[in-house]
Image 1 (cartoon, rainbow, N blue to C red):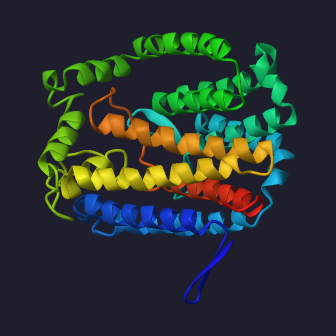
Image 2: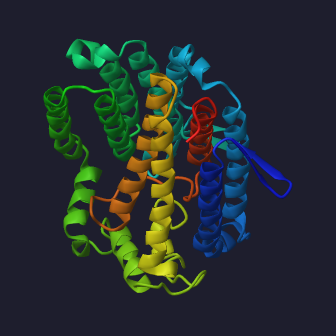
Length: 369
């Protein structure tokens, strides 16, 4: 569907396009708000992070509009290539090309450019799983039939946990389970698969001392207010200070170098401080609209591959939002994961916008909703 606004013509699902634009506007405003003080001190440029964010949005929307006009059905033929590229990029993180930050190697550094392969690998896995099941939906009925998808998801998870990055590992595992549910895997078999995965989480926590420290900080952050519990305490201060209506735009106190990663993983805390509970609620309503819109497109897709693609992309987006919100509110142990399209971080911005471009193309190839 083409929708005209003055001289601007939006081809495809204009409701999805406008919602994404609004979310990115929110992201730009709050990345600037959360980072301007720190950027001015550290980089002598209060717009440093905003400029990077705008570059990410520009590239991301180019990808969005290109993929909106690229026949998504071709992805089904090339899924092995996409999946292989995702694995190769993850493996490169473990080589000298990998960039280590705060004890974790999660990026590939090529000159001044850094890429976070886990974001790309998740999309590659969704494409691969959708292509595999769309060839024969009955594969989901047996363990033998789903083993290739479990192996593909397991391969991605293994390389991500080696970085180490448990939060994204959990997200990828969750997306895999959601897609298995979507293809109709029998509930008894799905539960039998979930139980050992859940049992594995405490083991992964126990074998890494830093994860145990984060767990203890989650249980009682005030036992280590200047150590592992510091970030969570500052996040809760921000949210508490915001109250119902917030302190006002650009007036956060916690962004003044009290809350680490205020422009990235904990940007929701700054949004809560400046706009209050109502501001967060409005943001989550916008995200929920995007998710429901993508699911509606999935339900009306003209083939099973399109359905699974959209459903998987919606799952990636929704799960990451949920995990980020639970972390900043102290509902689960602290871990590093950005709020999609809002937090600073160009790889996730570009990948998510490109993903939604695929969704928009599914919309253009179906009976309009």
